[in-house]
Image (cartoon, rainbow, N blue to C red):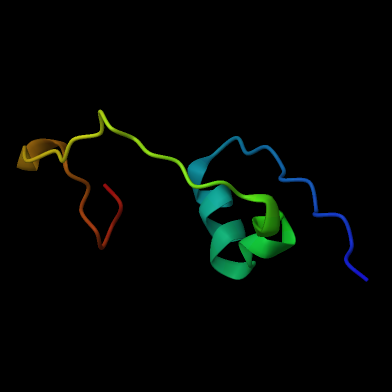
Length: 59
């Protein structure tokens, strides 16, 4: 029997949210069985290196 998904808590700092997602599976919080595919036609890749986040530090 499936249980209802947990409520996603609100966060005051990004580090706390990052810690939650690093240590938990999103399936505990979201029902992926009812997810719908979306298309983002106006999304473009940012090629400006000043605006990219460093993948190792997140800055």
